[in-house]
Image 1 (cartoon, rainbow, N blue to C red):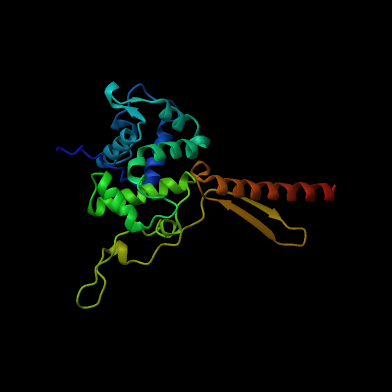
Image 2: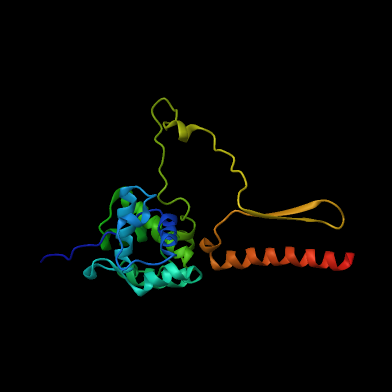
Length: 234
């Protein structure tokens, strides 16, 4: 008996996948191809297209024509979380049907991926990392065992040679650079003296629902404080 061909689950960086929709925000072409993401390497362009096919964002029988889900992902960033959740639940259903994802361990998830998808070794770890981050972005309930692994899964481990030193490239061995604050900032002068500065250095459309609510609440409180201060001075 011939076993059905397994699909290759997406294994590109999740952030690259999500940012790919920004290239389509000005309009989705009637057919998609790699040239839409010229800033990416040829390998990454291919992975983006494969991820679109995996989720049914393009119709392969129609020459990779965009589906309605892709139109919505591109035109309505605020809906991406809900749209992606439906896509994840549909396309990973076979891998997850054997176990309750709210109780699943990493070992169980790895076995599900090995059984359902054509991924092994490092590729399997990257595919699992993509899935976990997609599930988290979509507010899907995950077991605490999987939640704790979201940051660690897919990370490369450095090999320690016999002399006890750690091997790695110069960039890996160098101390981490201190990130400089970038983005939009707002400074208010406190009534009792001193200043308070709020700096936003994230892409708002990439935030999860809870984070978005928190950020906008902070902005509203800052504006409310300034308004009260101006009213009091008048």
